[in-house]
Length: 139
Image (cartoon, rainbow, N blue to C red; front, side, top):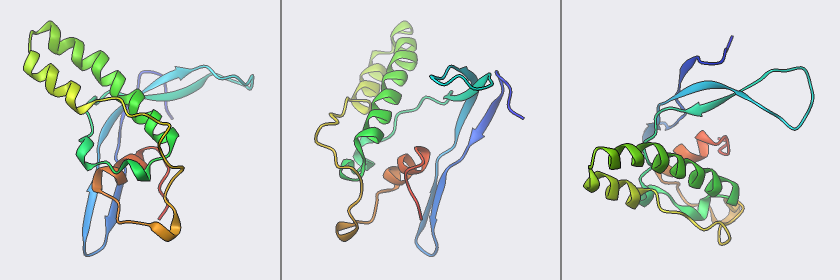
């Protein structure tokens, strides 16, 4: 049973037998959440503790919905807020500028709503990780 303050490993993965496999491991913290509904509570949610940027060159934005791009933008903002602040505090500006280059804002207005069946492409590895992490990829 989950309780506030617990930590656990989240390990979404995709394996294409005979070709490749990818798995991204993150540590998540169990936190209290408020909801707009008034059912019996309390409610719990998860916050990432492992704050490492995704490599933007490995993400095919044409395969992400606006919601997924917004999730990535929110994640990147949290990485900049937490990790970037620590890098600046330690005066590690080379690392801070590298972090900024990997967490640039992605406009959502030009995104598609997902993969079109007749125009499917083999997804990139990082793209699969994001789709799996956001629960948007079905095999």
